Amino acid sequence: MDVRPSIDSYSKKGTRLERVTGDITIKNLEFTYPSRANVKVLKGVSLQVHRGQTIALVGQSGCGKSTIMSLLQRFYDSDAGSISIDGVDIRSMNINFLRSCISVVSQEPVLFNCNIRDNIAYGVERDVEMSEIIEVARTANIHDFITSLPQGYDTVVGEKGTQLSGGQKQRVAIARALLCNPVILLLDEATSALDTESEKVVQAALDRAREGRTCIMIAHRLSTVQNADIIAVLDNGTVVEQGSHQELLAKKGAYHTLASGQLSLV
Image (cartoon, rainbow, N blue to C red; front, side):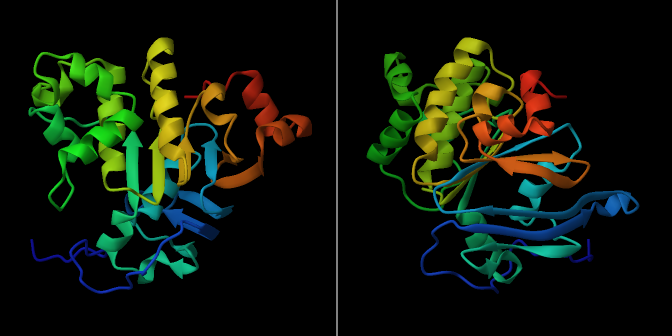
């Protein structure tokens, strides 16, 4: 109990930027997990994402995609290299400030046994107006469904959201992610567990959520990644290709091979 974590999530120290635009620079990133010190997960990864751009990370399972997202949120620090936001190394930023700039939508959203309104507002450290909740619910394509329920936003969703379908849960999670108005949006296989029809509705919500934000997405479906501004193909901890969908198809390299198999990777 007396052991201090290497990253103090409650630290008051660090820089708080007056304004964050969302330029992300990843430079020569190297990383090994403490529990597997002999396995290098990232081997000199470098990426650049400008404000408002979307980058899709693709590649086989274990190639380092999720690790990059974890490092960006400072769940770990890299062994070498750096991640900067607007030119400032994230290790010098106040950690709560850093994380307040970022929202995450993951494959399996976490909902609580309370009403929809409180699920959307969960984690926001201020009083939230109902008008704000409705606004983000509209953006997430879930408002009309909520208002069709007898109790509307007061509907209790059950433990882990069991009263909602997968697509409905995901759209509630998107609304929650948007409520803090993040500059950076991380999408970690946000549609991979959905059926085709639900995926279309959720993908439309994600497309609206990405507008004006810097977005990093991990996805295993071609339909999800092909409209990204940049696609980075990772293999064994390195970036082997990056460019737009059309540029990478024309190269007939690693991305072309993945796309030919519709990116259904495991």
